View 1 (cartoon, rainbow, N blue to C red):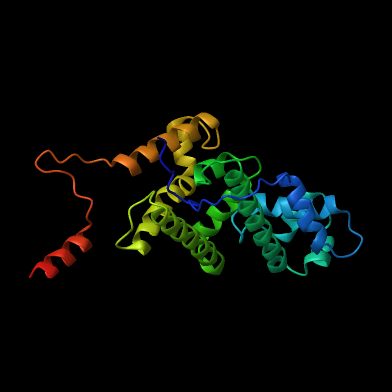
View 2: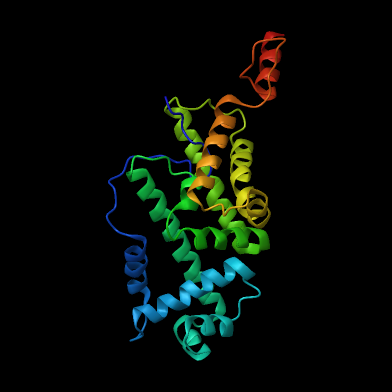
Length: 247
């Protein structure tokens, strides 16, 4: 029986499969926040350009002029519709979060495990993950907010798996969530080196298939072998509590 994939966005829930594509989802959301007569494609180009530039160069290096040039509009038009660079980045944050949530729900609706590996390989999710990865790398309030959001999703997902009997209850849920999240995010943050070493993009189907298989094996069967005694499922914290209760 295939075990659960337990990593970032591990939260599994049955939901009716959405028939919206990523592009339709983004367009609908952008329609709601478009001010003035600016065509939706121009506004979306500015947001898309910002997400790609921030993901590649970081927020500090992404200027309004660079966004305007990449989107084929004037800097004045960017300022007119977003007010400031901070306003533009805030809209991009909302767009990325909406995109990630939509992909996760779509994966869950397809009877799959909505994990980071599947998220990385999903169409149009790559720039969003690069954007988040860069924000985490750069730190600051934005990086803190993204990390807190992802750690809570991971922690809640593990709690749901434990409640359904698919995972052991954690003695230290906070540290468990940190380690699981770090294992997957490390691949994203070290993407340049990982891709150079593997000789293929991490978004390639063959690469994500290898990634998912090896990670599931590690989480299900572990790494170390103890030939002297049967493997114990108790953590040091649990063992310490047992010793105190026996005294």
